[in-house]
Amino acid sequence: MAEIRAAADLLSTVIAPTPMEFNRGLSERIGADVFLKCENLQRAGSFKIRGAYTRMSKLTDEEKARGVVAASAGNHAQGVALAGQMLGIDVKVYMPVRAPMPKVQATKAYGATIEQVGETLDESLVHARAWAEETGAILIHPFDHDDIVTGQGTCGLEILEQCPDVKTVVVGLGGGGLLAGIALVMRELRPDVRIIGVQAEQAAAYPGSLAAGHPVAAAKMQTMADGIAVGLPGDVTFPVVRDLVDSVETVSEEGISRALLFLLERAKLVVEPAGASAAGWLLENADTEPIAGPVVCVLSGGNIDPLLMMRIIRHGMVAAGRYLQFSVRVPDTPGSLAAILADCAGADANILEIEHIRTGPHINVDEVEIALRLETRGPEHCERVLQAMRDKGYTIVHEPEIP
Image 1 (tube, rainbow, N blue to C red):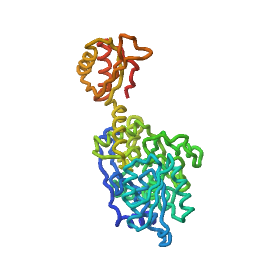
Image 2: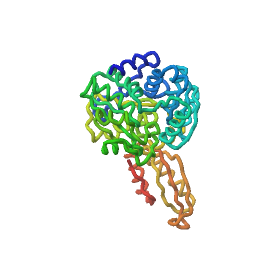
Image 3: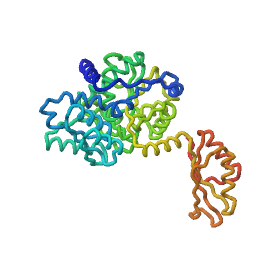
Image 4: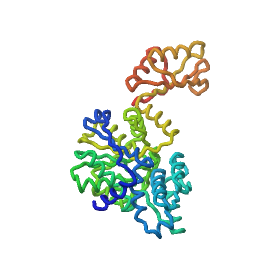
């Protein structure tokens, strides 16, 4: 705690505490007060500056002169680059080839040298380690170092200052630096607080590692949440998470996209997929998991590519029953399309896209298959639209799943 408090004093000249906002929508969903800890509004767009600046400020003058190297999907890169700019340290960052362009551009804007290699953070980290060995540059690990965990723990101090009666803290989990730092603070100052880590289920290394009792590589890494797509828990963070965190849960891709859409619409906050993972778990488990409040849900980052945001919003709209896609077969005669349009309008559904399919193994020569994408108002409206189409005598091809 002494080290975390010292880090908080150090950072007080660099960053300001991020806001904590009460969210009525989430509170109503889970039946307890929910507060959003908005690290997406942090300097450089995520909590990462906390650990990066803490770690780099402790380097000796000789180490600073050698420069630093990091590997990151984007947020850690920006934190290290910004810290390097403030401390006068040369920074080189290895990023995956598919790292979001806004994160790459922001890292460059802070003065770092960028090299994009590999498909994942773990592959980029191999190159960063090699560069450190070759040049003597100091490796600034994204999560697996005591100083990184200490710096991230300052977020836990802010949580207790802003919500002193907190009962549950929910945090997105990648390598575990933020979760470990917050857990250290809570267990020292508020041991009664329930701490929950949340991983994307398509990139979840911690559940298997906790079951095995040691870090085990994830079997797959296929998530939109690039900021928490870490294939192997760290030697520093794993035992802290194992010993101090109450549970590690997973959230689906649909849950993440729905949370991102929910936060955009209901909280007016731009959050990246990794940053929305904790809120996604709350939304997915609101009806099944008793959660004691007040709850603090940490929104860990807000650095998102606008193109990815467009795709995720569309994905979230489908997951929330706000889009409906289906196909019908009708006679290939004049007026058939006009009739479908009129019937969709009669069901109060807005047509977004239409596609004519005239050839296929199951389409007769006198038929046409029409694929429709409609804008709807939720799952119940989707069901009403489909039933209205059936009542009109249409054959619905490939019944859509309604969330």
